[in-house]
Image (cartoon, rainbow, N blue to C red; front, side, top):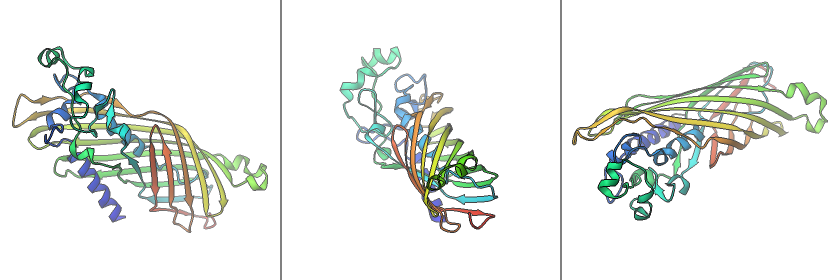
Length: 332
């Protein structure tokens, strides 16, 4: 568990400490990338499409790994583990609109073709003839996956299950805060109908699952006073269908809906150029909509790993390997 936690810490710090690298060979500067969060920034501001991949990938992570089984036993049960989702960064994360680069995008790619499609202030158009394109971040452009783990605890009784999850990091370098808190509720309905089914179908169970997460990220880049704050909310509601072909194996299918949004706030002023002031204030929604998942859960004593695949506008892989479940009835 310590190894997974260290990996998550490293990825989190790397991600949010490298988002706003300085300009080299046409990559976005700190000011350009930060201005995308500011509706009123004159040249580079008000670009939700540029930063949307952040919330798109976070929403997939925060809305994953709520379920370890479609069935919730009558007996008291306790669960604990470190689940996480692995979300591949694809070409769709690197461009938006008519080929414009996102914060994960390239440098100087098709800029002449897309410059006229940007929307910015009349002063910028008067000065440049069109709005300048903000290129991608050099470090994020090379990122292949998006992930971080969190601690998850759950308890259940009389077919109802309560899930709590969290992750909290202290202020480290440019990363001023990084926290996650969430809760989920699940209820299974199999005990109402399983005994009426043919024997071969009795391992079938169905449940309803709701999960909500809130996360806060604070970032203060070098050479800037102040902080960029990102407040993320995410929730999902799913019907979970499970079938046990063997006592130790359960195949799960989830069908449902997910939602996530990212609200930015704060004030930043460059210590090198005081006229560079940024007031983040945009709200960006993720790829909200239909959610589909397939998972396989194993029950080997108290060891309960779960592996799966999710699709919510893009693919993700759920890994719940270090997960443990203990029931007051050892036969469960």
